[in-house]
Length: 329
Image (cartoon, rainbow, N blue to C red; front, side):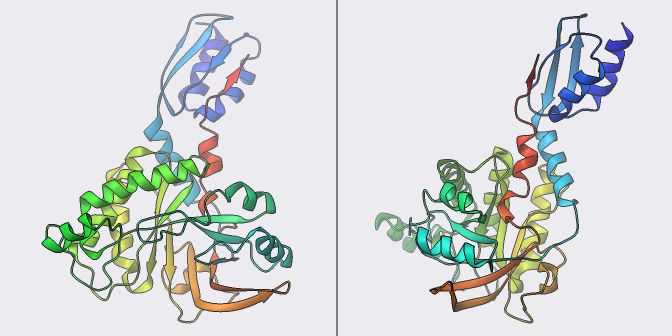
């Protein structure tokens, strides 16, 4: 084997797909033709000068590495954002962006417990304005009742065509609604690696059925691999939910922090960091609920948040993009 081939093997053995072009530059004396897949390199074949470098990849391993890399990258920032249930309209969003108070906004997918479709189709419009985005999927809620998925009440709700009901909270429903969240995120044109936050409202006591629901939802997104599962949760339930999500991430072979959006009005101020909510794992803190603010002469009812990054759902997308197919002649 030539020195160039040995050097290529050493470089590529350690490489991710995004590094293949760098490896090619290192062996410029040999006119290699690279065709890459997606993933951590698992094997390589080199047949001679001017021939192809053929590589096999482990996509799941790459995804896990990327999540770990991003979750450890940099200190927490302070980036203000807001969310509001119904899309305010293009003119209002442009006016508020020009006011310069907020950097990002919650982007509500149509979901079982959020039927309003007004945000749909607005991703490109908002990103063109310069807005960062936090994608929200409002799943099933307990409303402090006890879910009974196999009960007559659940069957009655199904027959009535309901999509949001306490008795729908279950592991199987989590799998079904994970598929729905994935398809809706794809339909909105969000890139691979986008974080999708499952909205779980406050519970005084968390029933096992709810734990089964959000764990199954998280597990299904991790298995699919296109999007990163996160959770919006009240501080009252945050520790328990965080531990469960970490368990699902580890079971999927992902040694990274799950994205956590924590809600609590206690002690919030606009100069705070997300971790000031009292949970070191918080990447977003929702600290003000149901206020009306006026910017640029336009009023909106909003919730106020602070995030560690300027676009909470985009923190992994650029890294995922680096694992897409690279072709270099």
